Length: 71
Image (cartoon, rainbow, N blue to C red; front, top):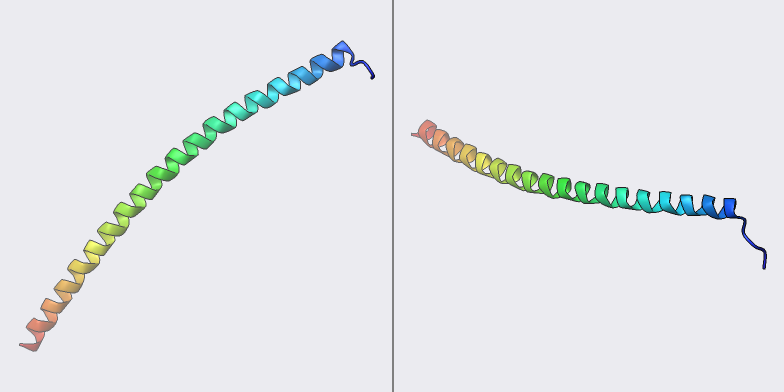
């Protein structure tokens, strides 16, 4: 079996360290993205509910206006 030179071993070791560092960084970024996604989903849910409420109020006003017009 061929022996690996010390320089080549050091180079491979440095690359492995870089990969580990990259994985840690990507994991941190992924967690931040998931937190942002969760926040945006909650905000979207709230906005959809507010939109439904506004639509319901508007429909109620339109019904009352039509009733007044028909009187």
